[in-house]
Image 1: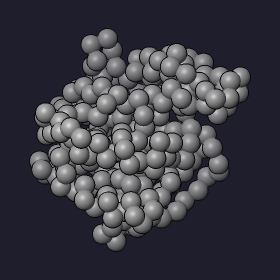
Image 2: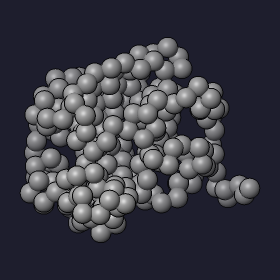
Image 3: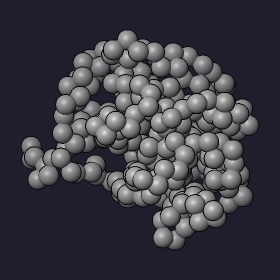
Image 4: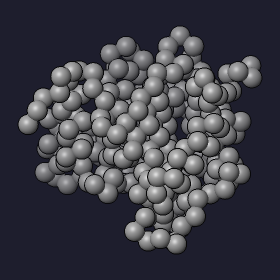
Length: 259
Protein backbone atom coordinates (compact mmCIF):
# COMPACT_ATOMS: atom_id res chain seq x y z
CA UNK A 1 0.00 0.00 0.00
CA UNK A 2 1.32 3.41 -0.95
CA UNK A 3 0.63 6.66 0.88
CA UNK A 4 -0.30 9.72 -1.09
CA UNK A 5 2.51 12.28 -1.37
CA UNK A 6 0.11 15.09 -0.43
CA UNK A 7 -2.56 13.55 1.81
CA UNK A 8 -4.03 16.93 2.72
CA UNK A 9 -4.42 18.18 -0.86
CA UNK A 10 -5.19 15.24 -3.13
CA UNK A 11 -8.37 14.78 -5.17
CA UNK A 12 -9.86 11.34 -5.89
CA UNK A 13 -8.97 9.55 -9.13
CA UNK A 14 -11.23 10.31 -12.06
CA UNK A 15 -12.22 13.73 -10.76
CA UNK A 16 -11.66 17.27 -11.98
CA UNK A 17 -12.05 20.16 -9.55
CA UNK A 18 -12.23 23.86 -10.31
CA UNK A 19 -12.43 26.86 -8.02
CA UNK A 20 -15.13 29.22 -9.23
CA UNK A 21 -16.74 32.41 -8.03
CA UNK A 22 -19.68 32.08 -5.70
CA UNK A 23 -22.84 32.66 -7.78
CA UNK A 24 -24.52 34.72 -5.10
CA UNK A 25 -21.93 35.85 -2.55
CA UNK A 26 -19.03 37.62 -4.18
CA UNK A 27 -16.76 37.63 -1.13
CA UNK A 28 -15.74 33.96 -1.47
CA UNK A 29 -15.37 31.11 -3.92
CA UNK A 30 -16.76 27.59 -4.15
CA UNK A 31 -15.67 24.45 -5.98
CA UNK A 32 -17.14 22.65 -8.97
CA UNK A 33 -16.22 18.97 -8.98
CA UNK A 34 -16.68 16.83 -12.08
CA UNK A 35 -16.59 13.17 -11.08
CA UNK A 36 -16.61 10.09 -13.28
CA UNK A 37 -18.20 7.87 -10.61
CA UNK A 38 -20.96 9.35 -8.50
CA UNK A 39 -19.82 7.89 -5.17
CA UNK A 40 -16.86 10.28 -5.08
CA UNK A 41 -19.30 13.12 -4.40
CA UNK A 42 -19.05 11.94 -0.78
CA UNK A 43 -15.39 13.01 -0.71
CA UNK A 44 -16.23 16.56 -1.77
CA UNK A 45 -19.22 16.88 0.55
CA UNK A 46 -17.01 15.92 3.48
CA UNK A 47 -14.29 18.34 2.40
CA UNK A 48 -16.76 21.19 1.88
CA UNK A 49 -18.63 20.59 5.15
CA UNK A 50 -15.32 20.76 7.02
CA UNK A 51 -14.45 24.04 5.32
CA UNK A 52 -17.84 25.56 6.08
CA UNK A 53 -17.45 24.68 9.75
CA UNK A 54 -13.87 25.92 9.89
CA UNK A 55 -14.83 29.31 8.46
CA UNK A 56 -18.12 29.63 10.36
CA UNK A 57 -20.06 29.74 7.11
CA UNK A 58 -22.48 26.98 8.07
CA UNK A 59 -25.87 28.51 8.87
CA UNK A 60 -27.73 25.23 9.46
CA UNK A 61 -26.69 21.88 10.99
CA UNK A 62 -25.63 20.52 7.58
CA UNK A 63 -26.09 21.64 3.97
CA UNK A 64 -29.24 20.52 2.21
CA UNK A 65 -28.49 18.19 -0.70
CA UNK A 66 -30.42 18.96 -3.87
CA UNK A 67 -29.71 16.11 -6.27
CA UNK A 68 -30.92 15.42 -9.82
CA UNK A 69 -30.52 11.76 -10.75
CA UNK A 70 -32.23 9.07 -12.81
CA UNK A 71 -31.86 6.63 -9.92
CA UNK A 72 -32.60 6.60 -6.21
CA UNK A 73 -29.01 6.48 -4.96
CA UNK A 74 -30.32 5.93 -1.46
CA UNK A 75 -29.02 2.53 -0.40
CA UNK A 76 -28.64 2.64 3.41
CA UNK A 77 -25.23 1.80 4.88
CA UNK A 78 -25.13 -1.56 6.72
CA UNK A 79 -24.14 -1.61 10.37
CA UNK A 80 -20.54 -2.67 9.74
CA UNK A 81 -20.04 0.19 7.30
CA UNK A 82 -21.56 2.68 9.74
CA UNK A 83 -18.82 1.77 12.21
CA UNK A 84 -16.10 2.20 9.60
CA UNK A 85 -17.53 5.54 8.48
CA UNK A 86 -17.09 6.93 11.97
CA UNK A 87 -13.33 6.52 11.57
CA UNK A 88 -13.39 8.97 8.65
CA UNK A 89 -14.43 11.93 10.78
CA UNK A 90 -10.81 12.94 11.36
CA UNK A 91 -9.23 11.25 8.33
CA UNK A 92 -7.10 13.09 5.79
CA UNK A 93 -8.29 13.58 2.22
CA UNK A 94 -6.16 10.74 0.89
CA UNK A 95 -7.68 8.24 3.31
CA UNK A 96 -11.21 9.46 2.54
CA UNK A 97 -10.61 9.11 -1.18
CA UNK A 98 -9.18 5.61 -0.81
CA UNK A 99 -12.05 4.53 1.42
CA UNK A 100 -14.69 5.75 -1.05
CA UNK A 101 -12.91 4.02 -3.92
CA UNK A 102 -12.37 0.71 -2.15
CA UNK A 103 -15.27 0.40 0.30
CA UNK A 104 -18.31 2.09 -1.28
CA UNK A 105 -20.59 0.09 -3.55
CA UNK A 106 -19.39 -0.01 -7.16
CA UNK A 107 -23.01 0.56 -8.18
CA UNK A 108 -22.61 4.12 -6.85
CA UNK A 109 -25.86 4.12 -4.91
CA UNK A 110 -24.77 4.29 -1.28
CA UNK A 111 -22.88 7.56 -0.98
CA UNK A 112 -25.81 9.82 -0.10
CA UNK A 113 -26.94 8.04 3.05
CA UNK A 114 -23.32 7.42 4.03
CA UNK A 115 -22.91 11.19 3.94
CA UNK A 116 -26.14 11.68 5.87
CA UNK A 117 -24.96 9.15 8.49
CA UNK A 118 -22.00 11.46 9.26
CA UNK A 119 -24.22 14.57 9.01
CA UNK A 120 -22.21 15.88 6.05
CA UNK A 121 -25.57 16.67 4.45
CA UNK A 122 -28.91 17.46 6.04
CA UNK A 123 -32.21 16.99 4.26
CA UNK A 124 -32.12 15.39 0.82
CA UNK A 125 -34.25 16.61 -2.09
CA UNK A 126 -34.21 14.36 -5.13
CA UNK A 127 -35.54 14.91 -8.65
CA UNK A 128 -35.57 11.48 -10.25
CA UNK A 129 -36.81 9.37 -13.15
CA UNK A 130 -37.50 6.16 -11.23
CA UNK A 131 -40.22 5.13 -8.73
CA UNK A 132 -42.94 7.40 -7.43
CA UNK A 133 -42.98 10.44 -5.18
CA UNK A 134 -41.88 9.56 -1.65
CA UNK A 135 -40.95 11.03 1.70
CA UNK A 136 -39.06 9.21 4.43
CA UNK A 137 -36.71 9.84 7.34
CA UNK A 138 -33.17 8.74 8.14
CA UNK A 139 -31.42 9.03 11.52
CA UNK A 140 -27.69 9.66 11.58
CA UNK A 141 -24.96 8.59 13.98
CA UNK A 142 -25.71 11.51 16.30
CA UNK A 143 -29.45 10.92 16.36
CA UNK A 144 -30.20 13.80 14.00
CA UNK A 145 -33.16 13.32 11.68
CA UNK A 146 -32.81 13.78 7.93
CA UNK A 147 -35.90 13.95 5.73
CA UNK A 148 -35.71 12.62 2.18
CA UNK A 149 -38.07 14.23 -0.33
CA UNK A 150 -38.36 12.54 -3.73
CA UNK A 151 -40.06 13.99 -6.81
CA UNK A 152 -40.64 12.94 -10.40
CA UNK A 153 -42.50 16.05 -11.53
CA UNK A 154 -40.24 19.02 -12.14
CA UNK A 155 -42.85 21.59 -11.16
CA UNK A 156 -43.49 19.94 -7.80
CA UNK A 157 -39.74 19.65 -7.19
CA UNK A 158 -39.26 23.30 -8.06
CA UNK A 159 -42.16 24.52 -5.92
CA UNK A 160 -40.92 22.51 -2.93
CA UNK A 161 -37.30 23.70 -3.13
CA UNK A 162 -38.43 27.31 -3.51
CA UNK A 163 -40.72 26.99 -0.49
CA UNK A 164 -37.78 26.24 1.82
CA UNK A 165 -35.34 28.57 3.52
CA UNK A 166 -32.10 26.64 3.03
CA UNK A 167 -29.01 28.75 3.67
CA UNK A 168 -26.44 26.09 2.69
CA UNK A 169 -26.96 23.84 -0.34
CA UNK A 170 -24.86 21.26 -2.14
CA UNK A 171 -26.13 20.91 -5.72
CA UNK A 172 -25.53 17.48 -7.24
CA UNK A 173 -26.33 16.53 -10.84
CA UNK A 174 -25.92 13.00 -12.18
CA UNK A 175 -25.89 13.21 -15.97
CA UNK A 176 -27.74 9.92 -16.32
CA UNK A 177 -30.91 11.82 -15.36
CA UNK A 178 -30.93 13.01 -18.96
CA UNK A 179 -31.45 9.56 -20.45
CA UNK A 180 -34.67 8.07 -21.81
CA UNK A 181 -34.58 4.43 -20.68
CA UNK A 182 -32.18 2.91 -18.20
CA UNK A 183 -29.01 3.96 -20.02
CA UNK A 184 -26.88 1.05 -18.87
CA UNK A 185 -24.24 0.20 -21.51
CA UNK A 186 -24.90 -3.51 -20.95
CA UNK A 187 -28.38 -3.09 -22.45
CA UNK A 188 -27.78 -1.45 -25.84
CA UNK A 189 -30.77 -0.08 -27.66
CA UNK A 190 -32.72 0.55 -24.47
CA UNK A 191 -31.79 4.21 -24.01
CA UNK A 192 -31.58 7.54 -25.76
CA UNK A 193 -30.13 10.82 -24.48
CA UNK A 194 -32.41 13.77 -23.90
CA UNK A 195 -32.46 16.26 -26.72
CA UNK A 196 -30.68 19.56 -26.20
CA UNK A 197 -34.05 21.25 -25.68
CA UNK A 198 -35.07 18.68 -23.06
CA UNK A 199 -31.83 19.15 -21.11
CA UNK A 200 -32.22 22.92 -21.21
CA UNK A 201 -35.77 22.61 -19.90
CA UNK A 202 -34.35 21.10 -16.69
CA UNK A 203 -31.09 23.02 -16.16
CA UNK A 204 -31.70 26.72 -16.69
CA UNK A 205 -30.42 29.46 -14.41
CA UNK A 206 -33.56 31.42 -15.25
CA UNK A 207 -35.84 28.85 -13.63
CA UNK A 208 -37.12 29.76 -10.14
CA UNK A 209 -35.48 26.68 -8.62
CA UNK A 210 -32.02 27.71 -9.83
CA UNK A 211 -32.61 31.32 -8.80
CA UNK A 212 -33.34 29.93 -5.35
CA UNK A 213 -30.44 27.47 -5.18
CA UNK A 214 -27.55 29.44 -6.64
CA UNK A 215 -27.36 32.24 -4.03
CA UNK A 216 -27.09 29.58 -1.31
CA UNK A 217 -24.87 27.01 -3.02
CA UNK A 218 -21.72 25.82 -1.27
CA UNK A 219 -20.49 23.31 -3.86
CA UNK A 220 -21.47 21.70 -7.16
CA UNK A 221 -20.89 18.05 -8.06
CA UNK A 222 -21.43 16.81 -11.61
CA UNK A 223 -21.35 13.03 -12.03
CA UNK A 224 -20.59 11.84 -15.56
CA UNK A 225 -21.47 8.17 -14.96
CA UNK A 226 -20.87 7.03 -18.57
CA UNK A 227 -21.90 3.48 -17.66
CA UNK A 228 -25.44 4.74 -17.07
CA UNK A 229 -25.49 7.34 -19.85
CA UNK A 230 -25.09 4.73 -22.56
CA UNK A 231 -21.36 5.39 -22.89
CA UNK A 232 -18.82 8.18 -22.68
CA UNK A 233 -19.98 9.91 -25.88
CA UNK A 234 -23.49 10.41 -24.50
CA UNK A 235 -22.08 11.51 -21.16
CA UNK A 236 -19.84 14.14 -22.78
CA UNK A 237 -22.70 15.36 -24.97
CA UNK A 238 -24.92 15.87 -21.92
CA UNK A 239 -22.09 17.40 -19.91
CA UNK A 240 -21.42 20.01 -22.57
CA UNK A 241 -25.03 21.19 -22.61
CA UNK A 242 -25.47 21.17 -18.82
CA UNK A 243 -22.23 23.10 -18.32
CA UNK A 244 -23.08 25.64 -20.99
CA UNK A 245 -26.44 26.26 -19.36
CA UNK A 246 -24.72 27.56 -16.24
CA UNK A 247 -21.24 28.73 -17.31
CA UNK A 248 -19.69 30.72 -20.15
CA UNK A 249 -16.44 29.89 -21.96
CA UNK A 250 -14.40 31.46 -19.14
CA UNK A 251 -16.16 29.24 -16.58
CA UNK A 252 -17.98 32.26 -15.17
CA UNK A 253 -21.61 32.03 -14.08
CA UNK A 254 -23.80 33.14 -16.96
CA UNK A 255 -26.46 34.68 -14.77
CA UNK A 256 -23.91 37.06 -13.19
CA UNK A 257 -22.87 38.34 -16.62
CA UNK A 258 -26.42 39.46 -17.30
CA UNK A 259 -26.59 41.74 -14.25
